[in-house]
Structure formats: C-alpha cells, structure tokens
Amino acid sequence: MPFLELDTSLPAAQLPQGLAGKLCAAAAAILSKPEERINVTVKSDLPMVVGGSAAPCAQLLVSSIAVVGTAEQNRGHSAKFFEFLTKELGLGADRILIRFYPLEPWQIGKKGTVMTFL
Image (cartoon, rainbow, N blue to C red; front, side, top):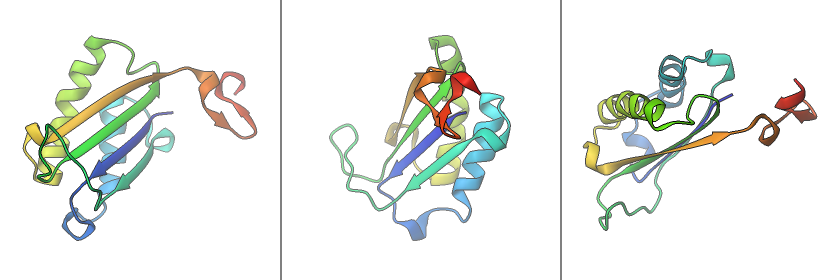
C-alpha cells in the first residue's frame, strides 16, 4: 500500500489536469503495485526552498511496504519518478527531491486494524 505525497511551490493552475491520477498510474507501474493500492496527495502553492533557492520546485515522498527498502530499488524508482515529474511539472531535475521511506505492515491502519492482520 504505497503512499505518495507531492508538495510543490507551483500554483495549482500551472499543474497538469489530473496530475494526482497520472501520478497514481505512474507509481503503480514504477512500484509494481495495483492502482487500487496507491494513495496520492498533491499539494500546490506551498512556500518552499530547495537547495537554498525559492525558485519553483517539488518534493515527492514515497512510503511503502517492501518496495522502497534498498538503495538498489530506490535508484531505479528514482530515475522513473524523475522522468515523470520533470515531464509533468516542467521542472529541472535539480529542482526536485524524492524521499523514500520503507514502512512495516504494523505502521499502516486500515479497516479498524493494521495491515499485519489483513
């Protein structure tokens, strides 16, 4: 059950139509998970600084069980997410950061319990 949180300083009007859905589909393909399990949040118009500059930028947080736990996995994921984000947001790769957080099943609550028991 991957969670993606995209924060950007770009104004909402400048984001592509349907960005959350496109990111969901891309994440499903990149992480080899069904779209039904992907959770996406997109926040725009945020005051942000990346690398000391307030120029337009974005940060993507990717949290998931099992698929973001190694450097080797994340190197491949990073390349594909950067390809998607630079194309969709029109930002240079130097204005985008990605953070990967591995999760354990007991850290995700669903249906009144945690994923460990589902």
